[in-house]
Amino acid sequence: MNDYALTELNKEKGFGGEGLTVDREIPIIDMSDYFHRKAEITEELWKAATEIGFFQLKNHGIPQELIDEAFFLSGQFFDLPQETKAKYPMLPGTNSGWEYKAQVRPSTGTPDNKESYQITLPRMKPLWPTGEEVPMFRPSLMAFERHNWALAMKVLSCFADKLGLNSDFFTAHHDPESPEYQSTVRLIHYLGMEDAKPEDFKFWRAGAHTDYDCLTLLHQRPGQGGLQLCPGKDAQGRAIAWTDVPPLAGVITCNIGDMLMRWSDDKLVSNLHRVRMPKPDEYLGPRYSIAYFAQANKDAVLEGPEGKYEPMTAHDYMQMRLGANFGKK
Ligand SMILES: O=C(O)CCC(=O)C(=O)O
Ligand SMILES: [Fe+2]
Image (cartoon, rainbow, N blue to C red; front, side, top):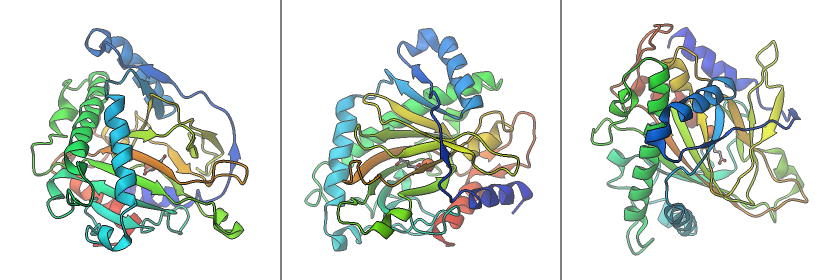
């Protein structure tokens, strides 16, 4: 493992505490009329992605009905008996299938209080629930996956323009027709806390981390908050203040991941985020979210235009990060 990789893994270990909270503005970027407005959208995306690493997209083009269906089907899946879900286990290093409280963040050392089901298309054959278990799960989520891919490619194309690369540079490296495709949809169910004991609240729904992909598109449900981001670091590189990311209706929350930070020679910034527990006077029910992680195909070589870091394949990069979160293969 090279030094850069080690720095990233160590970085996550120092952020387990509560920290301060401050209000910050999270840019909302209008994606409408993309092909005519691309230059303007590109400037807004670049500013947000180089300064705070987080932004929200409106008029993004993914039909609300498809998003609502994906959440409905996610709820149906997680309502299945544990023994049915256990037929579709997530094997280490695969980012596909179901896991229950298996993700231990390096920042906290304790499992996230959640279950998730991940879809990485080339690996799904044995992992789709049957049509009797969850009707329409596969067709609807395949459509959802492809819409998220298309939106992610629009955003990445803007970054390619600013980095002096061909507009379709990142699209070619996230080719879903390739067996090397490794972008992932993650359905997440954070467990309800209505009957939890006071000591259960000291854990995290998702411990502080940076994402290991290029770009994350996160769908949240209004009324189910808890996501916080932290763009600031103190002199020792520790988190200094956290900001709530509101789960607004009609927007998709996006953040840059470490893979793109490395690929852009650190111009685009991947920042820390986490999902906190509800406070006793807040909504205590379950929280559902869905993320699409654009992760370059396994055979992509991550090499920035300025060559700041040693080239590394996207496959090796992902395996390093998955090993640190879910145990080794
Ligand atoms: O559920 C959320 O709001 C955030 C999830 C997240 O950050 C992740 O899975 O990487
Ligand atoms: Fe994340």
